[in-house]
Length: 116
Image (cartoon, rainbow, N blue to C red):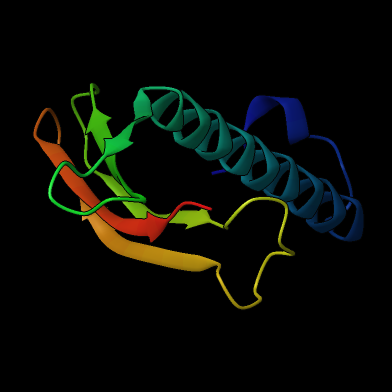
């Protein structure tokens, strides 16, 4: 059955109107999905702890903490870091990827680097 707002249109006009309506609805769904992803991402927090390693003189350690304070899992997380002002994706830079971060638990990971 034709919706009342489309009654009285010729078949070609009707098809064009239905296509336009479907495209608008698809755009609305895409915008709503983007808003949901942004809202979820805003609930993922990261902080770094760093300090000297007592047993190794001249070496500092760091720990990266990530927590998802939302109620839904966060997907496709990348944590990128580099040493000093080194260019990204060069010697001394690193990327950790996680397929998902469930709500509430904390991930802790890190490494050590020599300090000059």
